[in-house]
Figure 1 (cartoon, helix red, strand yellow):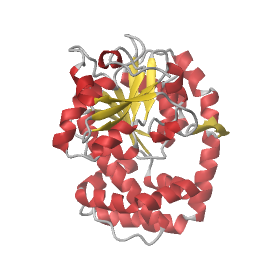
Figure 2 (cartoon, rainbow, N blue to C red):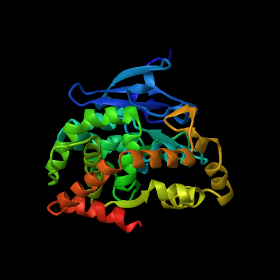
Figure 3 (cartoon, rainbow, N blue to C red):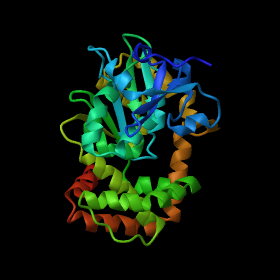
Length: 334
């Protein structure tokens, strides 16, 4: 087991992931990682401890923050999303490029959402630098957040740094959620919190009459949070359209993020084994074709409820400008 790193060692490279922060206690949890362990991990929240032991240490936040170099980088690229829209796959695929360190859903960002902006403001600049560390001077970090972290996207993304916003149209999103037992459980568990978040942004939806209504509210909640992001360099991408031309989409994303990659390498990645596995659990086979079949079946099974939920969103959008913007964006993509 490795001894605890010094604050100065934390800043050398990405070896020590700052996995969690506790502003009340003034502590952070540093977890030892390698380039390969970053690549393998679907998530870097507490699920990362479920299947294998990890070397970790609690360190004093202030000591690490004070040791930050004056020239510390804050040039991480970002992926935000509305959940269940292929963000893990896209982050994995881009993480195959030379020099790109893909960092998926560290708990530290979630920890900060529980505190008011004036408290977060004391932590965010250091967090931006901590998640810009790589294993080489010429490398680049790509950070994929958990969906509800979009609430603080404007705070997290440094001005001038690119962020990809992944989503799907509401009908596709609802079909995807309703097709899976786990996603439906998650939907119910987050329903009340999402209703609160919606109300705080001026969108008032009626009490749900079906699971499709809850899924529609989930889409609205996460889309509105993204739509509220201001004054940042953002590119929106519909995941279903991304899959229609995956090599071309990866070319678009790589250029947007400033990642060097040949067309040949991007085609190799887009047709490689990662696109035939379930990105959140690589032991399971999955593909764009299977996704289409699942969505189509769920769309048929829940069509009446989905149609009613879409009508509910349209009515709510009459008095909710951000929801209207989100629906218009989805409709504009054809």
